[in-house]
Length: 130
Ligand SMILES: [Zn+2]
Image (tube, rainbow, N blue to C red; front, side, top):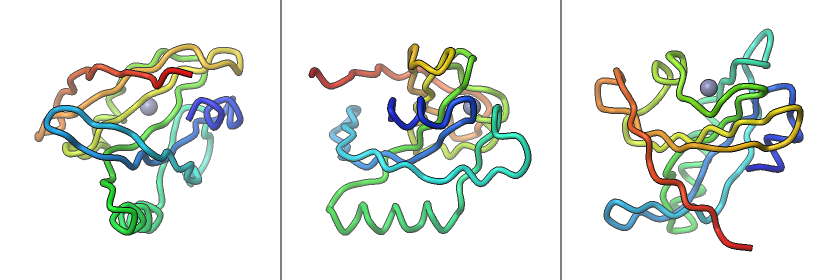
């Protein structure tokens, strides 16, 4: 995810996270980069192809995993969850936002939108050691 976010800088990257859900805890096993198909400037926008998302969901099921969320980057911006992000979100996914400053990964946050998509809660994000 970090490598993808840095590679697409100064544009936004996006992708899906496959993994497993155990109670309140979600573990990402595989992060798959997807194409940002947003028309126009991609420095502050991302858009996923619905069929890419469908394909990822199928792939997750084949691997006996769940599609647990979507990640995207914020080039030269903090890892906050924007109004647009909230509007384009799905309440059952976790949304990881990666802040990339001057082409280098800076920090990340994970957000969980509420069912009405009017607010999002920050989730604890634990990076793998190594
Ligand atoms: Zn965003």
